[in-house]
Every structure is written in C-alpha cells, then in structure tokens.
Image 1 (cartoon, rainbow, N blue to C red):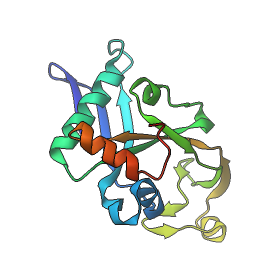
Image 2 (image 1 turned 90 degrees about the vertical axis):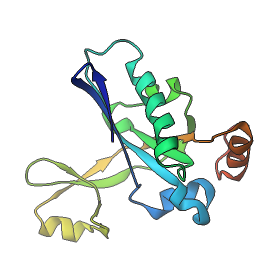
Image 3 (image 1 turned 180 degrees about the vertical axis):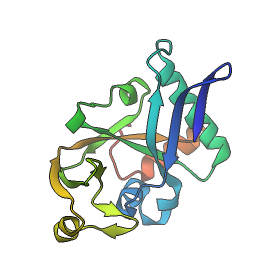
Image 4 (image 1 turned 30 degrees about the vertical axis):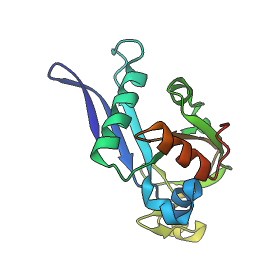
Length: 169
C-alpha cells in the first residue's frame, strides 16, 4: 500500500495485491513466472487533488514497487465497465490494454455489499450463495490493462517477448 500526501494530509492511496486467480497470474508470462505478477487492486484519490495527480501517483507507486519488490515484473489492473469505468487513467499512464474479461456472476449479500464469487480461496456456487442469503447479480465485462516493470530496456524487451499477450511491439 502506498499513500499520497499533501503535507500531513493523506489525499490518495494505491494498493497492490496478489490476484485471486492463479490463471490471471499465469496468463501474463506463463505458469513458471506467475509469482512475478501482481495486481493494482485499488486506487483512490480525493477529488480536491490537482490535475494529473492520478497519473503522477501511479507512476511513483510503480517505480517504488520496482524497488520494494524487485521480483515483480508485471502489474495487471482492471476497469469495470459495469460502473462506467473504461480505464482512462490506465490509458493515460501508458498501460497496455490486453483485452477484456467476459461477463460474470457476482452476489449481493444481506447488507447490499457486492461479493466476488470466490471467497477465501473457495468458489461460491449459486446454491452456496443462496444458503447464505445472497442474491445473484450479473456483472459486465472488465477491461484488462498491464504495466511491465523492467529495470532496463533490455529487460523490458525480454519481458515483452515472453508475454502471452501481443503488446504491439
């Protein structure tokens, strides 16, 4: 987790996390390199921040991640079209667009909270969700974006070459 501060006031946060799906991690460079992939999981910046604060913050966090976790070579992120997110900030920060997920079934719990169909490493079936009192909801697709974290042009070229997606290089 990283924070963006204006003097002593926290004005933004960015969190990286391990993607919940082994398939997502393996889809970038293959199964042998799945531990070199993480996800930009959450980004929030207060509306009062100056123009371009998001792109500045993402760039700084990616740079710091390379220092803090040198084994991480790729960061995947998603923009949820169900809520109108197209990935504008990812495009603005030169992330590679690597496709789109399909639609998916999610659940709404008794408190109205959206629940992912995978909870604590367990795939929740429709029957299990109904037993918990959760209702079923269909979500639209998500756009996939990718950042390559390389320490040199040579390394970036090698990573792009082994990437399972066509990055237009």
